[in-house]
Structures are given as C-alpha cells and as structure tokens.
Image (cartoon, rainbow, N blue to C red):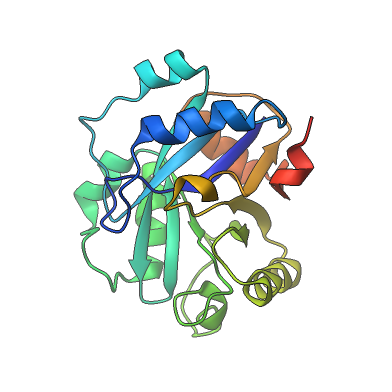
Length: 214
C-alpha cells in the first residue's frame, strides 16, 4: 500500500488546490505508478463536517485525514481522532508546547510525527536536544518533497541516530508536487485506527515516485 502522507488542499491557508484536482492527478499518475491514496494534513485545521468517503469511492483511493501543527520545536503531522485532539489543545497556536501536544495526541489514541525535521528552525532536528520529553515520538518524516536535499539528509541522520521509523510525503501545495514522496506500507488498511497502529508498528518505508513505478 503506497500513500502520500502529507498533502495540503484549499482548506490550508497557503494552498488553493481542491481534493478533486489532486485525485484526478492521481488517476493520471496511476497509469505508470502504484499509488493507493493520500492523507490530507491541513495547517492547524480539521473540519469534521467534510466527508471524503464519496470521493474515495469515486476515484478508488484511500483518503486519510491529518493536521500539521506548529509547535515550539517544529512542525508535526498528527493522525488519529483529530476532533478529540482539538478539544484539548488550541491548534491555532503556532507555538504549541510540543511535549504537551505529544501527550495529548498519545492519550487520545493518535500519533504525532515531526514534519520535515531537517528544515531549519521549523524542523525537529533543531530542537530535539532542548531537554524536554519527546519519548512519544516514534517516527519522523524523513523524506519530504518540499525540502532541500540537505534537509532530508539531516532527517535521515536523525532517524538513524534515534532509531525512529520513517515516513515520506510530498508536502504538496500544487498539483504537480503530489506523490513526489510516498510511504510504502507492508499492509493494506483504510481506517484511521489502523493507520495509527501501522505508524506505531513501523512496517513501512519512505520512497520516491520513481520507486513506485509499475
């Protein structure tokens, strides 16, 4: 199962692409590549009134939901019961206490994963040794389509040093960016509960689009 774990739509404040546009592009990519679906991870937002099940069925893709949160030690991708998480933390706060956020997400039954951790200032690599408790971090996004090569290399180094699992995502804000980086899972699944379980299990790897070629 191959998923782009980090995609932004018009729900985010810096993107104007609709979900339908992305899904049409996935159908084009599928002519030559194996792609199962994607995860919409909007900046600081989760709208529970949006239901992607119809689109998932229409385009025969798996669609997951996530959020990208900004904290005092970088950006995090959060997957799981997002409504429950939002009841306990202010996701509009761009300086969230990361340690507290990690605990909230863990207790809610979700998982929080540092996004583009090698990116200067907003990457987890630059904050991981600040003395706070980050034991709830089990995986990082080691391959990000919007990061520079050196930034992804720094993320890989962090994963190796700390024995973190590694995911990948395009960080797409434009259609042409979609699926540039992907996560290949050993299992197939469809619900967020299974997604969280798989992410904690660690049976997946980051790949680029060329690695998903048919």
